[in-house]
Length: 466
Image 1: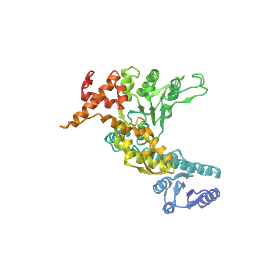
Image 2: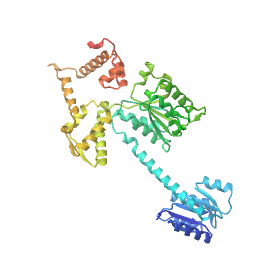
Image 3: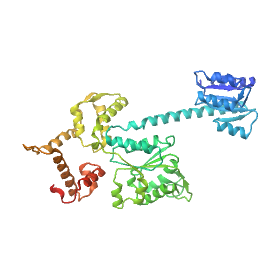
Image 4: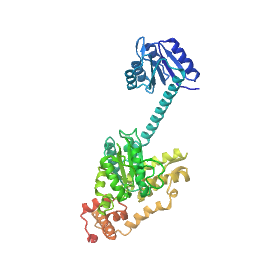
């Protein structure tokens, strides 16, 4: 039995009766009115009206105007306008005002039933889409990017500022820092949120297939092309395309992507037909594209096209103050999804996590909490619950300060720390032949952070004796 309610508004009693009977037999809950005033009173009930069949000419008013009034109290209402005076002008006016369809009298019963079913299905689909959009907005709100550190606060401010634009964004950061989460937050808080977000992992698709994947192909374009295929750019039209691991693109594809970005048009593989697209581009990479440009492995012109608005996601070791917030978030999440009852973490275990270097970043922390949720299940997380590698942090600190001696006269703490930091940086640079990218990896620093420190400190080759 259908729970959908249908309002029939027509001053012809025979028509109202006929529509009532046929729709009632189909299981709909039907209410009827003969005037605009009566229909408006019925619409003030607490019960929702899903569909209205409204005569265009009512004794006390216009049916299209009534439709607008009803939609104010029932926003999801679908309407079908009925009239004995069919014309193109009336049909256009009705649909422009939001009518689902326009039906000219006389009409047969099957036609009405079919149209009603389509209108109800359309309403259900709209509700489902709205629900999905609400879920997506909820999932990718700004406050789901967890943290209060200055580093992550800066990222959140950037996301908020760029989301409302169509500018190209380049998200940089190490693996596991949450680049895709940022890309999704940008899309689902933009004016394209109701359109598609199409993710493409450029590093996971073989280079010989990636062009077809991005631009599509026509039947017979190459061996195995047995039918036309729409590419990701065309599929993302009016929405957003997220190009992850953009640094993995081959030189030939870099040229093609540059043209798409510049002209917003392309030809599918094997086709001479040009396709225009309106698409926002968000790209991400965990490699240093500036260094790739210096090494001639990435096109400089493409880099500047992508790097309109750069957003760098700091690694977790550079925002350790966010660890408690992330822990709380993941504990709550896995308690719910895995029916567990972890209640927190004690200070000693938290200190161990603070001192860990987090090469896998936020993803590593999330995986750790999932593991603890499954294996421990409930209670407070203690040091004995942590895997062995997380015990190494305290030992590393002990080793680092083990040989330090404080003279009786004392020392200048800031100068000593600065000198030790300088020695570590220069040592890493000497070991890597002053390759800043590899030195940053040795020190487990973000390359841009290392470069800033080198400039600030004025470090040069031969400074190891500082």
